[in-house]
Image (tube, rainbow, N blue to C red; front, top):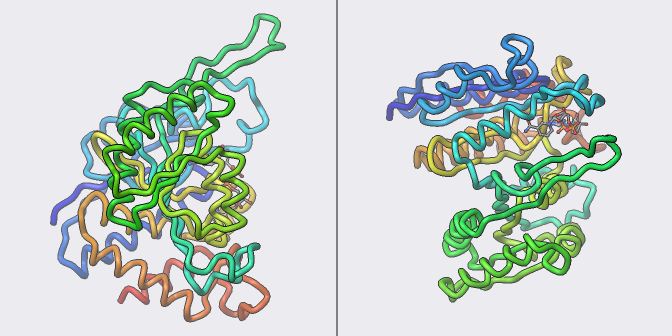
Length: 357
Ligand SMILES: NC(=O)c1ccc[n+]([C@@H]2O[C@H](COP(=O)([O-])OP(=O)(O)OC[C@H]3O[C@@H](n4cnc5c(N)ncnc54)[C@H](O)[C@@H]3O)[C@@H](O)[C@H]2O)c1
Protein backbone atom coordinates (compact mmCIF):
# COMPACT_ATOMS: atom_id res chain seq x y z
CA UNK A 1 0.00 0.00 0.00
CA UNK A 2 1.26 3.52 -0.87
CA UNK A 3 0.49 6.32 1.61
CA UNK A 4 1.80 9.82 2.23
CA UNK A 5 2.03 10.80 5.91
CA UNK A 6 2.57 14.27 7.34
CA UNK A 7 4.48 14.34 10.63
CA UNK A 8 3.91 17.41 12.86
CA UNK A 9 6.18 16.98 15.91
CA UNK A 10 5.21 20.32 17.56
CA UNK A 11 6.66 21.45 20.91
CA UNK A 12 8.13 20.11 24.17
CA UNK A 13 8.11 16.30 24.26
CA UNK A 14 6.21 16.24 20.92
CA UNK A 15 9.33 15.73 18.77
CA UNK A 16 10.81 13.23 21.25
CA UNK A 17 7.81 10.89 21.16
CA UNK A 18 6.90 11.40 17.49
CA UNK A 19 10.37 10.19 16.44
CA UNK A 20 9.38 6.75 17.77
CA UNK A 21 5.90 6.78 16.25
CA UNK A 22 7.52 7.40 12.87
CA UNK A 23 10.24 4.79 13.47
CA UNK A 24 7.51 2.20 14.11
CA UNK A 25 5.70 3.22 10.92
CA UNK A 26 8.94 2.74 8.97
CA UNK A 27 9.50 -0.68 10.53
CA UNK A 28 5.94 -1.81 9.76
CA UNK A 29 6.24 -0.57 6.15
CA UNK A 30 9.44 -2.58 5.76
CA UNK A 31 7.93 -5.74 7.30
CA UNK A 32 4.63 -5.67 5.40
CA UNK A 33 5.94 -4.28 2.10
CA UNK A 34 4.14 -0.91 2.22
CA UNK A 35 5.47 2.29 0.70
CA UNK A 36 4.98 5.13 3.17
CA UNK A 37 6.41 8.54 2.27
CA UNK A 38 6.75 11.35 4.80
CA UNK A 39 6.73 15.11 5.00
CA UNK A 40 7.23 17.36 8.03
CA UNK A 41 5.10 20.34 9.14
CA UNK A 42 5.47 23.12 11.70
CA UNK A 43 2.78 23.88 14.27
CA UNK A 44 2.63 25.46 17.74
CA UNK A 45 5.36 27.48 19.46
CA UNK A 46 8.03 26.32 16.99
CA UNK A 47 5.86 27.61 14.13
CA UNK A 48 5.26 30.96 15.89
CA UNK A 49 9.00 31.37 16.35
CA UNK A 50 9.70 30.52 12.71
CA UNK A 51 6.78 32.26 10.94
CA UNK A 52 4.74 34.27 13.47
CA UNK A 53 1.77 31.90 12.93
CA UNK A 54 0.81 28.87 15.08
CA UNK A 55 -0.39 27.07 11.93
CA UNK A 56 1.41 28.27 8.78
CA UNK A 57 -0.49 27.94 5.46
CA UNK A 58 2.28 25.64 4.23
CA UNK A 59 1.53 23.10 7.01
CA UNK A 60 -2.20 23.29 6.31
CA UNK A 61 -1.62 22.67 2.58
CA UNK A 62 0.61 19.70 3.35
CA UNK A 63 -2.04 18.37 5.78
CA UNK A 64 -4.79 18.57 3.17
CA UNK A 65 -2.60 16.73 0.67
CA UNK A 66 -1.60 13.84 2.93
CA UNK A 67 -3.34 10.53 3.66
CA UNK A 68 -2.88 10.81 7.43
CA UNK A 69 -1.18 13.04 9.99
CA UNK A 70 0.97 12.00 12.95
CA UNK A 71 1.05 14.79 15.52
CA UNK A 72 3.04 15.23 18.77
CA UNK A 73 1.84 18.10 21.00
CA UNK A 74 1.86 21.89 21.14
CA UNK A 75 2.32 24.28 24.04
CA UNK A 76 5.01 26.32 25.75
CA UNK A 77 5.33 27.50 29.35
CA UNK A 78 5.63 31.13 28.31
CA UNK A 79 2.01 31.19 27.07
CA UNK A 80 0.51 29.17 29.96
CA UNK A 81 1.16 32.01 32.39
CA UNK A 82 0.41 34.84 29.99
CA UNK A 83 -3.37 35.01 29.40
CA UNK A 84 -2.90 38.20 27.38
CA UNK A 85 -0.79 36.51 24.66
CA UNK A 86 -2.53 37.24 21.33
CA UNK A 87 -0.97 34.38 19.39
CA UNK A 88 -0.89 31.01 21.18
CA UNK A 89 0.40 27.55 20.14
CA UNK A 90 -2.98 25.86 20.82
CA UNK A 91 -4.64 28.09 18.20
CA UNK A 92 -2.79 26.03 15.61
CA UNK A 93 -4.37 22.83 16.87
CA UNK A 94 -7.89 24.30 17.00
CA UNK A 95 -7.47 25.71 13.49
CA UNK A 96 -6.25 22.46 11.91
CA UNK A 97 -9.17 20.55 13.55
CA UNK A 98 -11.63 23.06 12.09
CA UNK A 99 -9.97 23.30 8.65
CA UNK A 100 -9.78 19.51 8.22
CA UNK A 101 -13.33 19.01 9.57
CA UNK A 102 -12.04 16.73 12.35
CA UNK A 103 -15.25 16.65 14.35
CA UNK A 104 -14.89 13.23 16.01
CA UNK A 105 -12.14 12.47 18.50
CA UNK A 106 -11.87 8.77 19.32
CA UNK A 107 -10.04 7.92 22.53
CA UNK A 108 -9.77 4.23 23.36
CA UNK A 109 -8.99 3.55 27.02
CA UNK A 110 -6.85 0.49 26.53
CA UNK A 111 -5.61 -1.22 29.62
CA UNK A 112 -2.55 -3.45 29.45
CA UNK A 113 -2.79 -6.04 32.25
CA UNK A 114 0.86 -5.45 33.16
CA UNK A 115 0.01 -1.88 34.10
CA UNK A 116 -2.82 -2.68 36.51
CA UNK A 117 -0.53 -1.66 39.38
CA UNK A 118 0.64 1.56 37.70
CA UNK A 119 -2.76 3.14 38.21
CA UNK A 120 -3.75 4.86 41.42
CA UNK A 121 -7.03 2.87 41.24
CA UNK A 122 -7.43 -0.65 42.63
CA UNK A 123 -6.56 -3.40 40.11
CA UNK A 124 -9.81 -5.31 40.80
CA UNK A 125 -11.82 -2.18 39.86
CA UNK A 126 -9.82 -1.70 36.66
CA UNK A 127 -9.32 -5.20 35.26
CA UNK A 128 -11.38 -5.70 32.12
CA UNK A 129 -12.01 -2.00 31.46
CA UNK A 130 -12.41 -1.24 27.76
CA UNK A 131 -13.90 2.14 26.90
CA UNK A 132 -14.11 4.00 23.60
CA UNK A 133 -14.73 7.73 24.00
CA UNK A 134 -16.26 9.81 21.23
CA UNK A 135 -15.47 13.43 22.04
CA UNK A 136 -16.99 16.10 19.77
CA UNK A 137 -14.11 18.25 18.58
CA UNK A 138 -15.16 21.28 16.53
CA UNK A 139 -17.93 22.87 18.58
CA UNK A 140 -18.71 23.92 22.19
CA UNK A 141 -17.03 26.67 24.21
CA UNK A 142 -13.79 26.09 22.29
CA UNK A 143 -15.26 27.62 19.14
CA UNK A 144 -18.16 29.75 20.51
CA UNK A 145 -17.84 33.53 20.67
CA UNK A 146 -15.34 34.75 23.27
CA UNK A 147 -15.92 38.15 24.91
CA UNK A 148 -14.23 40.44 27.43
CA UNK A 149 -15.88 43.59 28.71
CA UNK A 150 -14.24 46.96 28.09
CA UNK A 151 -13.14 47.21 31.72
CA UNK A 152 -11.69 43.64 31.33
CA UNK A 153 -13.50 42.54 34.51
CA UNK A 154 -16.08 40.29 32.87
CA UNK A 155 -15.51 37.44 30.40
CA UNK A 156 -17.63 34.84 28.63
CA UNK A 157 -17.26 31.87 26.25
CA UNK A 158 -20.31 30.82 24.32
CA UNK A 159 -21.23 27.12 24.67
CA UNK A 160 -22.93 26.48 21.34
CA UNK A 161 -24.02 23.39 19.42
CA UNK A 162 -25.95 22.99 16.17
CA UNK A 163 -28.11 19.92 15.61
CA UNK A 164 -25.99 18.66 12.68
CA UNK A 165 -22.82 18.77 14.80
CA UNK A 166 -24.38 16.48 17.39
CA UNK A 167 -25.93 14.17 14.78
CA UNK A 168 -22.70 13.48 12.88
CA UNK A 169 -20.67 12.48 15.95
CA UNK A 170 -23.58 10.55 17.48
CA UNK A 171 -23.84 8.58 14.24
CA UNK A 172 -20.18 7.48 14.56
CA UNK A 173 -20.68 6.54 18.22
CA UNK A 174 -23.88 4.52 17.57
CA UNK A 175 -22.19 2.67 14.68
CA UNK A 176 -19.23 1.82 16.94
CA UNK A 177 -21.55 0.69 19.75
CA UNK A 178 -23.29 -1.62 17.29
CA UNK A 179 -20.06 -3.52 16.55
CA UNK A 180 -18.83 -3.46 20.15
CA UNK A 181 -20.95 -4.40 23.16
CA UNK A 182 -24.10 -2.51 22.01
CA UNK A 183 -23.96 -0.09 24.95
CA UNK A 184 -23.74 3.67 24.57
CA UNK A 185 -23.61 6.27 27.32
CA UNK A 186 -24.21 9.88 26.28
CA UNK A 187 -22.81 12.36 28.80
CA UNK A 188 -24.19 15.90 29.16
CA UNK A 189 -25.40 18.46 31.68
CA UNK A 190 -29.00 18.64 30.48
CA UNK A 191 -30.30 19.57 33.95
CA UNK A 192 -28.57 22.97 33.63
CA UNK A 193 -27.40 23.74 30.08
CA UNK A 194 -29.61 24.46 27.06
CA UNK A 195 -26.92 23.18 24.65
CA UNK A 196 -26.95 19.89 26.63
CA UNK A 197 -30.74 19.70 26.36
CA UNK A 198 -30.39 19.91 22.57
CA UNK A 199 -27.60 17.27 22.80
CA UNK A 200 -29.87 14.89 24.73
CA UNK A 201 -32.85 15.53 22.43
CA UNK A 202 -30.78 14.66 19.33
CA UNK A 203 -29.25 11.53 20.89
CA UNK A 204 -32.70 10.37 22.08
CA UNK A 205 -34.08 10.82 18.54
CA UNK A 206 -31.19 8.91 17.01
CA UNK A 207 -31.44 6.11 19.57
CA UNK A 208 -34.80 5.19 17.96
CA UNK A 209 -32.83 4.21 14.83
CA UNK A 210 -30.61 1.94 16.96
CA UNK A 211 -33.04 -0.21 18.98
CA UNK A 212 -30.30 -2.87 19.30
CA UNK A 213 -28.08 -0.40 21.21
CA UNK A 214 -28.77 0.10 24.90
CA UNK A 215 -28.56 3.91 25.19
CA UNK A 216 -28.11 5.61 28.54
CA UNK A 217 -27.88 9.34 29.39
CA UNK A 218 -25.73 10.51 32.28
CA UNK A 219 -24.88 13.91 33.75
CA UNK A 220 -21.19 14.85 33.53
CA UNK A 221 -20.75 15.16 37.30
CA UNK A 222 -22.14 11.66 37.82
CA UNK A 223 -20.07 10.27 34.90
CA UNK A 224 -16.87 11.72 36.40
CA UNK A 225 -17.66 9.91 39.64
CA UNK A 226 -18.76 6.59 38.02
CA UNK A 227 -15.63 6.50 35.88
CA UNK A 228 -13.39 5.96 38.90
CA UNK A 229 -15.97 4.04 40.94
CA UNK A 230 -16.81 1.45 38.31
CA UNK A 231 -15.12 2.05 34.93
CA UNK A 232 -16.32 -1.33 33.57
CA UNK A 233 -19.81 0.14 33.53
CA UNK A 234 -18.84 2.08 30.37
CA UNK A 235 -18.32 0.87 26.83
CA UNK A 236 -18.94 3.58 24.18
CA UNK A 237 -19.10 7.06 25.72
CA UNK A 238 -20.37 9.96 23.61
CA UNK A 239 -19.85 13.50 24.83
CA UNK A 240 -19.26 17.15 23.95
CA UNK A 241 -15.90 18.86 23.49
CA UNK A 242 -15.30 20.32 26.97
CA UNK A 243 -16.75 17.38 28.94
CA UNK A 244 -14.78 14.94 26.76
CA UNK A 245 -11.55 16.85 27.29
CA UNK A 246 -11.82 16.56 31.07
CA UNK A 247 -13.34 13.08 31.25
CA UNK A 248 -10.66 11.50 29.02
CA UNK A 249 -7.81 12.99 31.07
CA UNK A 250 -9.49 11.48 34.12
CA UNK A 251 -9.80 8.18 32.25
CA UNK A 252 -6.07 8.28 31.41
CA UNK A 253 -5.43 7.26 35.02
CA UNK A 254 -7.24 3.99 34.31
CA UNK A 255 -4.52 3.25 31.73
CA UNK A 256 -1.83 4.23 34.23
CA UNK A 257 -0.54 7.42 32.58
CA UNK A 258 -1.22 10.09 29.99
CA UNK A 259 1.78 8.60 28.24
CA UNK A 260 -0.25 5.46 27.40
CA UNK A 261 -3.24 6.97 25.60
CA UNK A 262 -3.60 7.61 21.90
CA UNK A 263 -6.35 9.35 20.00
CA UNK A 264 -7.70 9.58 16.48
CA UNK A 265 -9.46 12.66 15.15
CA UNK A 266 -11.55 11.94 12.11
CA UNK A 267 -14.17 13.67 10.02
CA UNK A 268 -14.57 14.54 6.37
CA UNK A 269 -10.98 14.18 5.17
CA UNK A 270 -7.49 13.37 6.38
CA UNK A 271 -7.30 11.63 9.79
CA UNK A 272 -5.17 13.12 12.56
CA UNK A 273 -3.46 10.87 15.13
CA UNK A 274 -1.90 12.02 18.38
CA UNK A 275 -1.21 11.11 22.00
CA UNK A 276 -3.72 12.68 24.40
CA UNK A 277 -0.99 14.34 26.43
CA UNK A 278 0.38 17.84 25.94
CA UNK A 279 3.92 19.15 25.46
CA UNK A 280 4.86 18.37 29.13
CA UNK A 281 7.43 21.17 29.60
CA UNK A 282 8.33 19.71 33.01
CA UNK A 283 10.07 16.72 31.37
CA UNK A 284 10.83 18.04 27.85
CA UNK A 285 14.36 17.43 26.56
CA UNK A 286 15.19 15.04 29.42
CA UNK A 287 14.60 11.69 27.67
CA UNK A 288 11.85 10.95 30.22
CA UNK A 289 8.70 11.03 28.05
CA UNK A 290 6.82 7.81 27.45
CA UNK A 291 6.69 7.26 23.66
CA UNK A 292 4.02 4.51 23.82
CA UNK A 293 1.05 6.87 23.31
CA UNK A 294 2.63 8.11 20.07
CA UNK A 295 3.32 4.52 18.98
CA UNK A 296 -0.28 3.56 19.82
CA UNK A 297 -1.43 6.57 17.75
CA UNK A 298 0.34 5.00 14.79
CA UNK A 299 -1.55 1.74 15.41
CA UNK A 300 -4.81 3.72 15.33
CA UNK A 301 -3.75 5.40 12.08
CA UNK A 302 -3.03 2.06 10.40
CA UNK A 303 -6.35 0.61 11.53
CA UNK A 304 -8.70 3.57 11.08
CA UNK A 305 -7.26 5.48 8.11
CA UNK A 306 -5.67 2.63 6.14
CA UNK A 307 -7.70 -0.43 7.29
CA UNK A 308 -4.44 -2.28 8.15
CA UNK A 309 -5.65 -4.24 11.18
CA UNK A 310 -2.91 -6.92 11.18
CA UNK A 311 -0.24 -4.23 11.18
CA UNK A 312 -2.00 -2.36 14.03
CA UNK A 313 -2.30 -5.58 16.04
CA UNK A 314 1.40 -6.27 15.55
CA UNK A 315 2.20 -2.91 17.17
CA UNK A 316 -0.03 -3.43 20.22
CA UNK A 317 1.35 -6.91 20.63
CA UNK A 318 4.96 -5.56 20.54
CA UNK A 319 4.03 -3.07 23.28
CA UNK A 320 2.39 -5.84 25.27
CA UNK A 321 5.57 -7.95 25.05
CA UNK A 322 7.74 -4.96 26.05
CA UNK A 323 5.62 -4.42 29.16
CA UNK A 324 5.42 -8.17 29.94
CA UNK A 325 9.22 -8.24 29.88
CA UNK A 326 9.13 -5.65 32.66
CA UNK A 327 10.27 -2.56 30.74
CA UNK A 328 8.75 0.75 31.89
CA UNK A 329 9.25 4.48 31.45
CA UNK A 330 9.24 6.45 34.73
CA UNK A 331 5.55 7.44 34.48
CA UNK A 332 4.37 3.80 34.46
CA UNK A 333 6.96 2.31 36.82
CA UNK A 334 5.92 1.24 40.32
CA UNK A 335 7.65 -0.12 43.41
CA UNK A 336 7.80 -3.61 41.87
CA UNK A 337 9.63 -2.44 38.74
CA UNK A 338 13.23 -3.60 38.39
CA UNK A 339 15.19 -0.29 38.45
CA UNK A 340 17.38 -1.63 35.62
CA UNK A 341 14.27 -1.85 33.45
CA UNK A 342 13.17 1.76 33.88
CA UNK A 343 13.97 3.24 30.49
CA UNK A 344 14.18 6.65 28.91
CA UNK A 345 12.25 7.67 25.77
CA UNK A 346 14.91 6.46 23.34
CA UNK A 347 15.56 3.09 25.00
CA UNK A 348 11.79 2.41 25.26
CA UNK A 349 11.27 3.25 21.57
CA UNK A 350 14.17 0.98 20.69
CA UNK A 351 12.71 -1.88 22.80
CA UNK A 352 9.39 -1.70 20.94
CA UNK A 353 11.28 -1.84 17.63
CA UNK A 354 13.17 -4.92 18.88
CA UNK A 355 9.91 -6.66 19.83
CA UNK A 356 8.43 -5.73 16.44
CA UNK A 357 11.29 -7.62 14.84
N1 LIG B 1 -2.89 18.17 22.28
C1 LIG B 1 -2.00 19.06 22.73
O1 LIG B 1 -1.11 19.49 22.04
C2 LIG B 1 -2.10 19.49 24.18
C3 LIG B 1 -2.94 18.85 25.08
C4 LIG B 1 -2.92 19.24 26.42
C5 LIG B 1 -2.09 20.26 26.82
N2 LIG B 1 -1.31 20.90 25.88
C6 LIG B 1 -0.33 21.94 26.29
O2 LIG B 1 0.77 21.27 26.89
C7 LIG B 1 1.36 22.11 27.86
C8 LIG B 1 1.51 21.34 29.18
O3 LIG B 1 0.22 21.09 29.70
P1 LIG B 1 -0.08 20.15 30.95
O4 LIG B 1 1.13 20.08 31.80
O5 LIG B 1 -1.36 20.58 31.49
O6 LIG B 1 -0.39 18.71 30.30
P2 LIG B 1 0.61 17.58 29.80
O7 LIG B 1 -0.22 16.50 29.22
O8 LIG B 1 1.65 18.15 28.91
O9 LIG B 1 1.33 17.03 31.14
C9 LIG B 1 0.61 16.63 32.28
C10 LIG B 1 1.50 15.76 33.17
O10 LIG B 1 1.64 14.47 32.56
C11 LIG B 1 3.01 14.18 32.31
N3 LIG B 1 3.12 13.58 30.97
C12 LIG B 1 2.44 13.96 29.86
N4 LIG B 1 2.78 13.21 28.83
C13 LIG B 1 3.70 12.33 29.28
C14 LIG B 1 4.46 11.28 28.65
N5 LIG B 1 4.34 10.98 27.35
N6 LIG B 1 5.31 10.60 29.43
C15 LIG B 1 5.45 10.86 30.74
N7 LIG B 1 4.75 11.82 31.39
C16 LIG B 1 3.90 12.55 30.66
C17 LIG B 1 3.74 15.54 32.34
O11 LIG B 1 5.08 15.39 32.70
C18 LIG B 1 2.91 16.31 33.33
O12 LIG B 1 3.36 16.07 34.64
C19 LIG B 1 0.48 23.35 27.96
O13 LIG B 1 1.09 24.38 27.23
C20 LIG B 1 -0.83 22.92 27.34
O14 LIG B 1 -1.51 23.98 26.74
C21 LIG B 1 -1.29 20.52 24.58
